[in-house]
Length: 183
Image: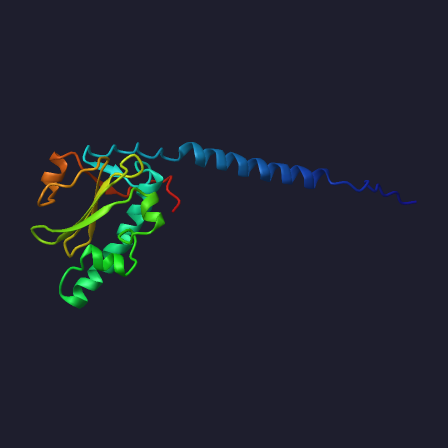
């Protein structure tokens, strides 16, 4: 007679291998996270700069976005017509933030003027309600748009150049992108 031992069905060995594989994966993940370099601390902005993401009120963020888009539109109009459009012409085309509509009033009711700079043009918007949104300057020099802010109902110095604006307390709005920025 021949005897054969038949082991009962079970998953002890498979379970052991799955647990070992999971442990190896967790250990390697913990090691990778532990060895990962800590990102450098964010450098503070210069005194004459303000971050568009964290330093502006909601109304100012809306105006900043409108001015960025308007800068491109104004550059195209300037190239097509050979001259800078006036704020009144921009308002007639309903280009925000130059258009006098309810949203403009809710964002500070800015009075816009056109000024020349050494190498470009500037649109200055003096706020009627600086507690909602400060006064703004959109400068176009052919290389892009610079937007400056002062939280007061004050016109910029003439001409609105970097040194004069900084000396008068205006802050240039910049967009900083860090690891925490998701947009």
